Amino acid sequence: MMKRILAAMGMSAALTVTAQAQDAATGEKVFAVCRPCHQVGETAKNGVGPKLNGLFGRKSGAIEGYSYTDANKNSGITWDEATFAEYIRDPRAKIPGTKMVYAGLKDDQRVKDLIAFLKQFEPDGRKKN
Image 1 (cartoon, one colour):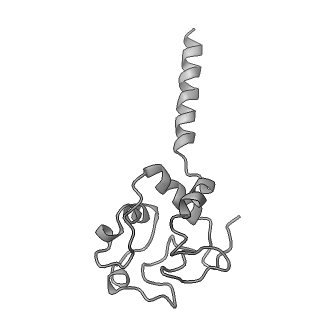
Image 2 (cartoon, rainbow, N blue to C red; image 1 turned 180 degrees about the horizontal axis):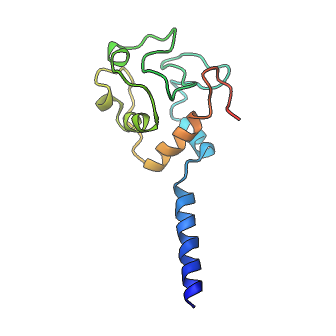
Image 3 (spheres, helix red, strand yellow; image 1 turned 90 degrees about the horizontal axis):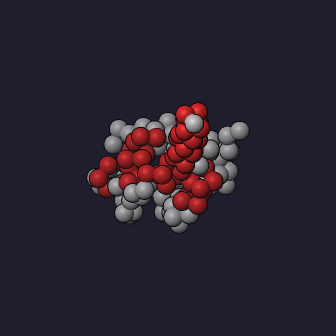
């Protein structure tokens, strides 16, 4: 009986971890909200917002050909998962003076999934293998 209980607990814990993992396919659906302003992929171009290829490890305000605010250019931010998660929850709180007009993505799982989606793209827009 004890073995069954422990096995059930282990399966429950595994399901919980799986449910909280990053999911790039779900993140692509979350990105639909971003798509009116941002692009990713090999044909991505700057639009209302900069293209987001190779976002993680890049300094804020660094995409050539995009007109950033001084707030973005001078923020001192190098994008990583934690910084992006904080930013996407409330862009104007993280970078006061940004021109990004977005109320924020508050759901932690959707933030993780969006990060998983964006992390797939190299700076040239190719998807990582």
